[in-house]
Image (tube, rainbow, N blue to C red; front, side, top):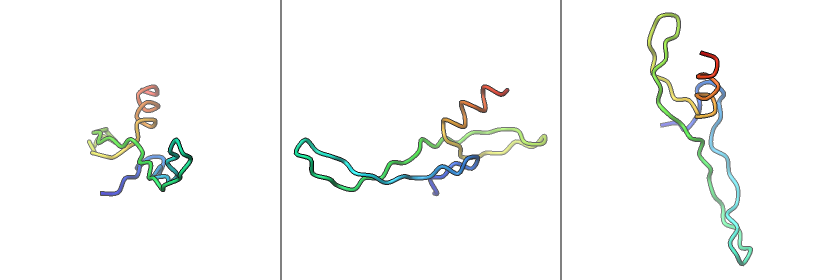
Length: 61
């Protein structure tokens, strides 16, 4: 399953975890992806969108 928003295209980002002793280890930050049913042109579709897009989608309705 691809961890990617179908509206904005936001995907996983990579960075470092930094410990108290300042050691760096690689870390993956996944976006908060939710499965949502929305109506597009009269047809209900199930899509994967991030929560920031879901919030802006609810504001516009």
